[in-house]
Image (cartoon, rainbow, N blue to C red; front, side):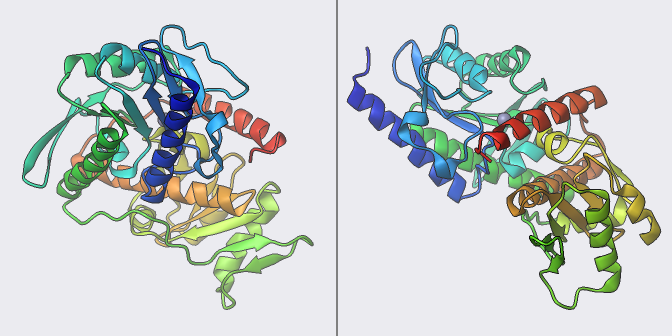
Length: 364
Ligand SMILES: [Zn+2]
């Protein structure tokens, strides 16, 4: 079987509409995650690397050869194409794949478990977890493929410390899997943490720098002690232009109880840093303003998430909330699998390098 140009165009449009749907319900955020569709025995279409879902057009969806990952056109296929290709090889019945960094399933994949046992509706659910490897590596594709091979009846898989892979014969099935998986993992985490789980950014005292370099506070009567923190951040971090004070439930809980956070998830290591200290008193806050660490915790009062733009700061705030949910789950569970410092440093450098490159050519 081989596809004509018309069917290819339809398949490209379908990938875009699925990506918008998953973006709208919050399973896909910014440029993270990716989607693919098999178009014949030898090829699949996949979303490009580093482009926001809002900005996708059909010609950006890349045609990739399953056997050697060669591709056509100007757009680079997603860095996780190896994972997609490996799944298509193992599962000839699979026609559509969704890879996400969705919150609850990703957090369930930080506890060091090989399988997650939970439920969804009246059904018992078992989700296999693929062992960790750095993103974009052959090892990661092998780890995922080995789980997919071992559990041929499963369509949802967790990638440890990273995200998920959901398979379907078509887009409808794969999307259904991704939603089911998130709801099943929410049940799982609620059981582990013995509390209701919520995800989101609850911002309070935000600020930004205007064109003259003045600090503009979102809330007029921002307390002086909070203003001091904002001033110090802008002073010590000339690259920062926007600060989001995140007081979400998970972040506030961690700001009360923990003293140090090591990354449990890839995107934490990439966007936030290789480790974050949580001060026990107000004076310590200023010592924790550091280059390449995009979060400054305040004791018992959430965290300041910083960025060069509002959208960068919001990305940090979103990833921090997820990281704090994972951290809380690991504490409650009693164990977890942390990323090694070596892995974190590698990802953090790589991310900053490729991100500044994207910014340079205007894809920011
Ligand atoms: Zn990913």
